[in-house]
Image (cartoon, rainbow, N blue to C red; front, side, top):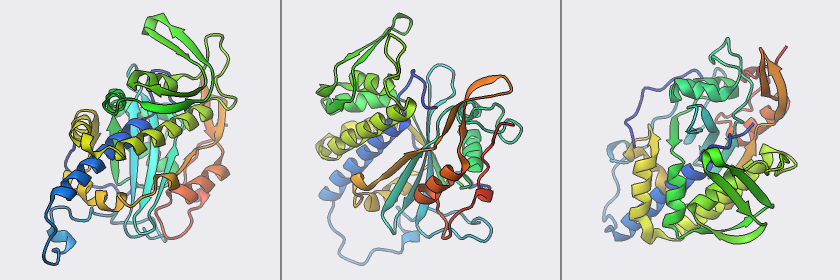
Length: 340
């Protein structure tokens, strides 16, 4: 569901097994909007006169953050987004991703914030793990993530992961190189996963299972780097599906239906259409992705397995992928909580 514009704010480890990363479902549904736009544009009659100024057109330029960080101005035509999805059981966020899109440079950075990231429960959060903030609504999660990374978010997008299954099925499945032997069963969830490694055609439910699994039945981790490895698999799945979506614009009605049913955002339709034109020129292979680095074995106030971030490494990623300002950000701009 597309919502109207909200008043902007100027203040500015990994998903549980019950849901796939929002990065997958979100980008795919947004890709559907691009495909819809391609169909619309191909059928439209080219204008015969100079277009009206942006502020007078239906798809006018979205408003930018009006008050940039002190001493560091926002770059023009550079926008930030927070993407999220719940774990479908507790209401906590299973997926949290920060995205910055620099239109002038045609650069996109997408950074996963591990769901167990340690945050100060006495600051904006009410629990040591960032994922719990989503239970109080997307606004609370936005505030906590903005405080953590030192950047304001211009827009949010939340996704129901059932849309991921629907989209893959609408595409007739996707060919994907399963990275490892996968065996997992949980009768309570009616969840049964069984894949051999290698290239194979996956339907929506199968693609979701490949993205969900993190350990086999014997308790061994599927990836040597744990959830970082799972994020890598999901990012590869994202690229595979997004490419197929854009290669099949004739399915535009299906994409639009899925977008309307499973995606919630404060982007207006006018703003979505404004973003479409520059996004069509993006090279998906050039999108920079990263996961905030840290230690997932930390305990704080009796809460185990908190993911304590490494400040210097996080700052490097923020400046490389997310910084919407003209000058580099510093550690003083971020609020990375460390357990005593």
